[in-house]
Length: 270
Length: 309
Image 1 (cartoon, rainbow over the protein chains, first blue to last red):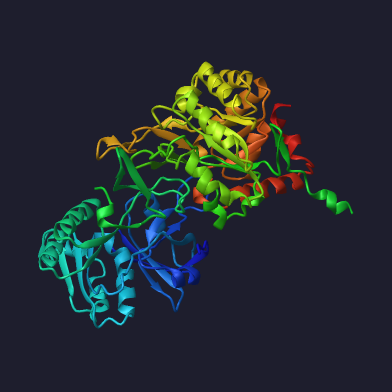
Image 2 (cartoon, rainbow over the protein chains, first blue to last red):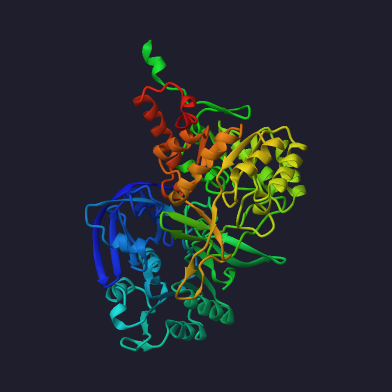
């Protein structure tokens, strides 16, 4: 069921300059949302043509009926959203999209996040932590450009405490953790045959490199992908992602909003 | 029982088809009907115009397919659709219970394709009318090559009219020197109504990549940015051509819709606004109703072309 509430802003916090954590009150959405799903946020109440912006659900608090978005200010829409204050109301639509598939029995997992890509993966970790998690081995790999841009690393460490596997960090400048791209940590995990499934989200190049590694090691992956989106409900065919399932010479496109935003790694044509 | 008469008449007739009210959806923005049923009781609408159908399934253009501009939206979807046969088999049956006019939009690469698709759709009782998309700017072979030529437009209309009894609505392109000339030409060829306008061709450039933003380089501009162009086009054609007009281009609210009606449109289509406000169609409808009541207007038909008087 898709809801379209006017959701009150509970809080809006800056994680570091240009990165915000926005929490809204929406019992309907927070209680039914699955990790990997997203919401469409109306940016301006005006009748101009500013499109809604899609945001992965970053975490939910089902008891309080709240959900959070974690986003970077990258353009006009996110800049306007970042100026929204507590107790304002946002017109949101959700939950939308398919969400991550958590297969029964697969308990050795890697979560790989490139920068803000941690947004939907945090919710996945939250959900996995609710399960009887003694058997879970989850390697959480976080990448950032620099230590200052590490997102919620402490909170992620405590969230994943109960899983064996632990959190590993990579920064481009080496200020924290491994120096280099987070895909190097993923390569290590894959080469050592530590996991059966990889969940990833991040920049296009990060996903492209990760997909190649997964293929090389024969491990399945689920990627949360992004594309410019309009309707969010499968009507306009704007937000498509090219897939590998080519029918002859014709490409096959899938809609990120309803066929995704989560796709199997080998499905996406990079 | 005076109050019974207070409800203004919203019904309009276009090409022999009765519309319970003048608000329809613009092709390409409302999928194949069901998508918006979460937000809108589809039976409340005057009609639903589907995304254009081609003879064969069409994969569409490479992404990015949209880009937001000032008060507008550039798109180059490229007519992605399942093809007319899949549409008839898998989509159409589910629309039986919706009590509104179902208008199928047709696109094609040549005159024969338009006729072939029209022939197939013409057999369906669910379909009330056909809209000919001769104005899509986003596919190389199809659409706009017809819409910019008076003779080619007429040829498409004639070929479709020869295979179906359904009313034929022709969607006109604004990307022409004289939209009135094209309108005259399709009218003479037997068109029953006009939809206007389709998107305006445009493009945007990513200055960091030094590349066009859209995967297909150029796209069609829609949204409030194009509304004055569209209102002017409706105004011009209404004066010169004796065919009912469905007006569209940047309608977001009742006020916008009423501008089109007063310029000469008998019905209006809501397009891009659906993406931002999924209830835009019913909001427009409610707003029109309120305007009529507040201004003591008993019949929407009294406002059609009112600005010309």
